[in-house]
Image (cartoon, rainbow, N blue to C red; front, side):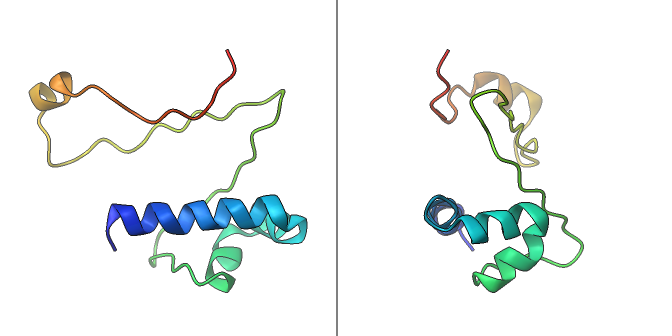
Length: 87
């Protein structure tokens, strides 16, 4: 699955959490089962954690270091994701 397809799936999951509190609670309690029920496959051997940001708690996600870039290449990279942090 491409990164764009995966991103679209996760956007749909977040949208469902916002509109369906029962689904959100299931996702927080048992992420792998909730994702599977929503049609998102989790590869064998992969653990999933679901966390919720609040107005008092912010989780900062540090993505895995790309394995196909050297440290020199990584030093040249600029960018990232804007997640709407209000500070």
